[in-house]
Image 1 (cartoon, rainbow, N blue to C red):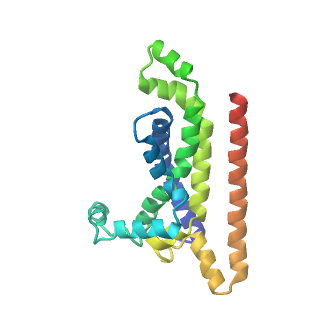
Image 2 (image 1 turned 120 degrees about the vertical axis):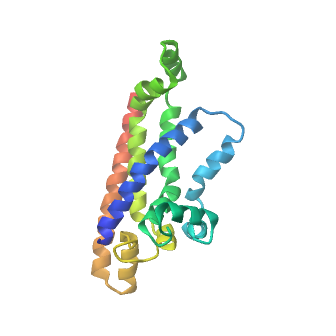
Image 3 (image 1 turned 90 degrees about the horizontal axis):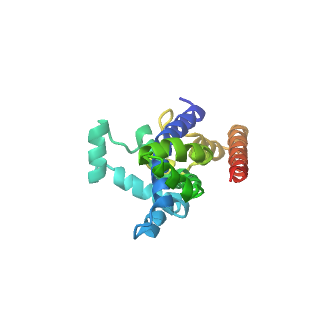
Length: 219
């Protein structure tokens, strides 16, 4: 599989798996006032400030067959997760968590308390309130979360290299292929791949910006 399609596959699975998690955590952080919430938020947003190589190192150690977590996951997947596509997906879920949570958290926080209380008074359960009231008002936040997660996964380098290595057809993503091309002084190939990432990144930012403007108009 080419680095381009491998990156798209990684971004697709990361986004599909992470958005439901981002919705749940974002909703909890928006509505909960439990003690220690600040520490939970710090943990969720830690990948934003932690160097990718540091995060990648800890992921590599954790997923190693010599670690109890790595042993358990190797038993579940019937193979070690380090230097595998499955390991890349798991690492991507961790490193992209803030990009899935933050837009969802902001979207839930923007919902008026009176709206949710009116739904409860009308007899809607918490589940129905989420499905019929909250989620329709949060769809722009979910769109932003999905767009940012997908775009960031396409361009991730440090964690992907640490956990997945550089195996052709298995873990060599587009960002690693760019690095390899530069190392080999193949500038035309590197330029073509970087332009593709640049265009997609611009489109992703435009989508997020337009969605944010639309959300402000709705409010």
